[in-house]
Length: 121
Image (cartoon, rainbow, N blue to C red; front, side, top):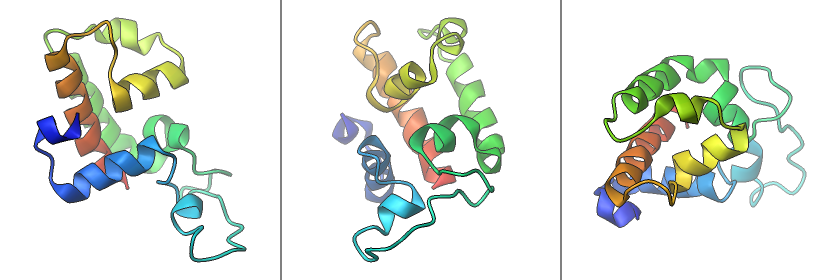
């Protein structure tokens, strides 16, 4: 789907890294350091996970607010329904879309997510 989004290569790489759980500092550097033992986030949270990065990290609040506002403005997307979902379901929609939504809506959500990820990673 990313090829249809016309993303810059660097943004596409970041999107795909987070999709396969290689976006945290510990995971990203794992191939270089066999004993990289600090999984913490720069914000001080104990573990820099995909969920933490996308939904909770206070260092991403500004970018997350812009992303959230952009989602709310999508005409074919029900943000109120999205807000009630579990964290896992939100992340799945942000990174892969939702089969219940149109291809165009999924494309817009993934594009917004990719640009959000580019700002926080």
